Length: 82
Image (tube, rainbow, N blue to C red):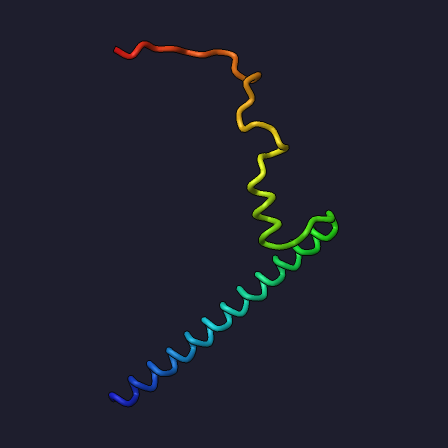
């Protein structure tokens, strides 16, 4: 009986290991497809593709404007602090 339980546990472990490897393979393939799509889009738009270019683009303010536009402020509430 003990041998039978060990065989069942071994088969279950093997099936779970195979299932996990299949899931990891699907994840790697989907990631490769996503990176390929990002690469093609960057090439079509004429932008460089890479971590450094992405980081430099994200560090610049949007449109080179200030982060806060004072023209949008229409009302200011002031309170006295005792």
